Length: 457
Image 1 (spheres, rainbow, N blue to C red):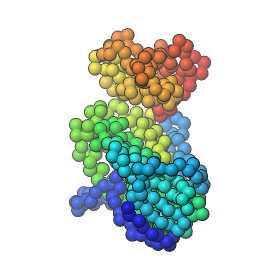
Image 2 (tube, rainbow, N blue to C red; image 1 turned 90 degrees about the vertical axis):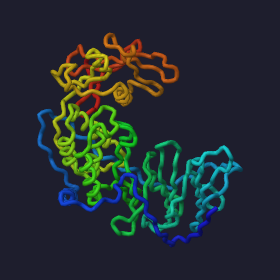
Image 3 (cartoon, helix red, strand yellow; image 1 turned 180 degrees about the vertical axis):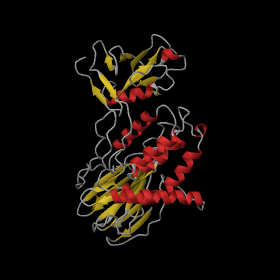
Image 4 (cartoon, one colour; image 1 turned 60 degrees about the vertical axis):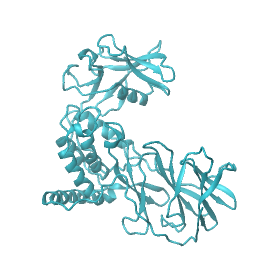
């Protein structure tokens, strides 16, 4: 067991570990690379100068509703209520301990022979009374006992891991004032992180990454994980603040620009043989530092496939929902279709078990029709309640080209529960609904990938 005695005012030296989303040490820049980094720095400067005043995009031919609003801030932190006093099993032994003022912060390891390494437990207690208990604890952060946030109290840092090849990790930070207050809990993901005072003000930022696109467009090894910087906000906790540190992304942007320009689709283990995963790191860099116009410009220049507009809408929709993203300014005016009409493409040939997303007047078997697999449609339908928990979408019969169905099946036993209809007979943009003996409400898909309920059909 390692025991560390700390006074509230004691400061530890932080050993920095590279964040999972950051680029490694770069070779010396060539003249072209130096020029690129200069352009990046200029763009970053423009972003910081322009914030927070938004720009007004010019009108598009097909007006769409405004983009999603900024991610709301979390509620103010409150004292953590004490959990029920439950004694740990006798097999748990203290492996790491910090004594911080009146608090005892401990990491307990299960010494049973059949236990897993990620089954540890962390506790924060006072005089034997457990106030905080966290499962799947891996370690107590080295800055435990330090005033990380500048609030005048020492803090406790707990790192967790649930087990699995690529998931999931999280970092907790508690303020050890009169009562423990949770100021940070990162979402479970493949990303670790580190605390670092990036602006020299004595308050530590948290540098991590966002892996929201892991496995979405390609295998894990090629999936992007964009750098994210969280900053402490008094009375709120740690909040996304990457645009405030946009200058720190210059090297990432330069590296990812070269990577996107030089990549071949067959190098990136993509599910659809495009270069999505080669271009996406650069697009995400620009989005997360608040340069959405540069993100679109990069995608438009480097991604030359028929689903360009759909891909952009997918990226924007996913990023806007991330708790690690901080919007800055307006999105650029990208020409999106008003609606997509989902239609099975199975009649186009035996290798066309996809869902086409047709624009108005577009033929189903046109090679320019953007398409996605049935799994993608299932994920979309869960958002509007047409698929429930424990249900999945299945194209049947297997390998069909005619008389194909989209069956709703129960995951536990593959029993058929109903079907999804992609009705194109009502004219553009069609209607999507579920049949279980009775019909559900009907829906249609907008060009920005938001669903609208159809009224009057």
